[in-house]
Length: 444
View 1 (cartoon, rainbow, N blue to C red):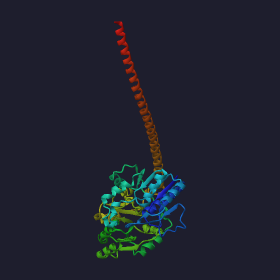
View 2 (cartoon, rainbow, N blue to C red; view 1 turned 45 degrees about the vertical axis):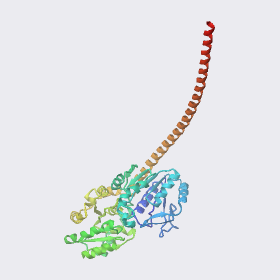
View 3 (cartoon, helix red, strand yellow; view 1 turned 45 degrees about the horizontal axis):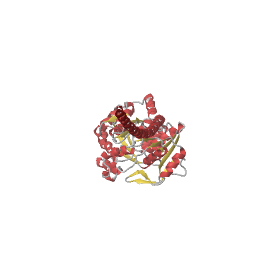
View 4 (cartoon, rainbow, N blue to C red; view 1 turned 30 degrees about the vertical axis):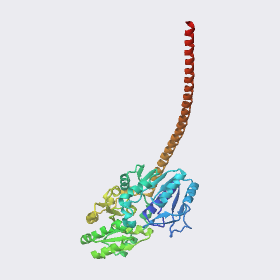
């Protein structure tokens, strides 16, 4: 199968979407399929050494969302390239520039489009003109309008499915959680000495519990709620919070830590290299997130792959993922964070390897890619069936119109003939009447 993925976000830009696409591409290629990634330009991309299957189109940032791009050149070129590669299906991963371009190309090639909805935009509209341009209530209309012409939609979690259903979208849907490359986080080669060295460099004593927050530092990640719970935890257990990442909310968090006078218990590392994140996951006793905006959150999967339990805000996705205390615990609200952490620390036990191995396959990129491929196949079959049905109906309509025109002409001819025969019969009747009249007169 030849698959075209259209996305605004791809490496070297760091994002969950980029990671998801890369994992999907690698696993689909392992299955023998060809994947072509149509994406935007990036000043940090090494285009001279990128694989040939990555095709970039000149673009500019979209308003306040720099990671979303608007394509300004190459629309016709995208169609030509896609036609040359003889794509079987297009998979759009954004509702903006490249997503719209992918739909246009699919329409020209007459192939199906399948879409993955990654983002719950209601939580991000404040980034665009401070929320004055787009209201949360407008999101469903924007998404519904974008999905016109698509054949199906992939929902990375039950939460996304519930959201899509609330929009009134009737397209075929399938919940397929994004998987990850387990080898990037299992990292059996990382030694206990290396992990211990990292903990010590972060200022953790051997008896201290390490909570890890690893994400973009933004208001919607709700790291501030975890920070706010730290004073309660410090009073009862030896603990430190390590915040890995950077972002627009960093200064606010640092000010919050200072106001709470807990600088000795919260460590800010800033952004770390991708290949180093596994060390932080393995060094942590628990990965913690109070975010309520995640449609799935790859960091949860990365933590589990590294063998680290998750503490997070409950949602439909996480209820399925963290379905056993073996994998962590969920808290219902910010007020429950401290008690949840304390319970997890006091009741912690050795990892059940059998349970973890089963969970690891569930969250693997291999399982993810197989499910997506199955959905591709089903979508293509249904698309062709619909097209064939539409073609049959078009031919039937043409035949019906032709038959209708022929019938009209026949009725018109018969009407003319009927008039002719009527006139002839009338004339004959008059002649006969005259003949009878004459004959009666002669008989007298």
